Image (cartoon, rainbow, N blue to C red):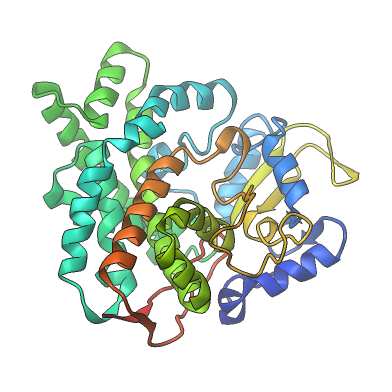
Length: 400
């Protein structure tokens, strides 16, 4: 079986393909992607927890093999992208990953993120006050919010948030399957602009320290606990990992409520359900439905043994619709309990920003349902193509 992630049919409904994968009853080799696909909840959870399955190819393949893989995927000849994007907290393992995660972990705890809730509510309220009638929700609403929230966390001035969001989109677009030379040049040139910006912002924070993440990352670099490349990579990752995925799940979450109007009515009648409804949005349409792992040694998984070097595709999107794990998995249930979804990943690479993502979503949907008593879907969305992202390109709605 071969998935066709760039097709409109897969973009519209990947879940039919995921159902077929689960029906195979065993991991499925995808010759086009050159990996074994894992569509079952238990398999994906086990793979995410297994420390022998790693994100980075280092230690699994030789330098020559890694170089050949990069050439085949058109990931080569990108000096700044290689330094700051291809290496990151997300794509590291073991002691390096643990050290980098520990350095920023306290910035992302529920208590730390709670400090951003009031300002986020003010910003979202002001945005919704300006948006009414027929709107394109992705561009007119969702796209404005994550950059502001994450920018506040980083310490970027509000006037720079739009530029940061544009940079994020230009870099992240190169992570999926369509890696043309034009997209490659865009990603590399944007990385250079982002790098220059972060160097200048860090220099400013060294002169005038503030209570923000850039100030603390710069201090960690000066103390020798963080290299210069790790500082830049971590700052870039925090924006890039949270920006596009938040826009996508905000938009797919609203679409889910519009597809299931009884659940929107239920949520309006009982706002206490909102935190659980947000969790259901991440289960129902996880914005990052696919991540890879490499076997760093021979491993047994899903009833068979795979050799060192095997590449796996962890299909979080399929796992979240597995009927063995969720009753009526294709139904959006604002009160689903329990809801042990994998929308934030699992194991060592559990999404660092899960608290800020949920806080933002709770704030947005709380304000939206309170301020707009009638929300109507005007046209079915066209969905993004690709395996690594899930979200509408545009969502035409009427807010009354």
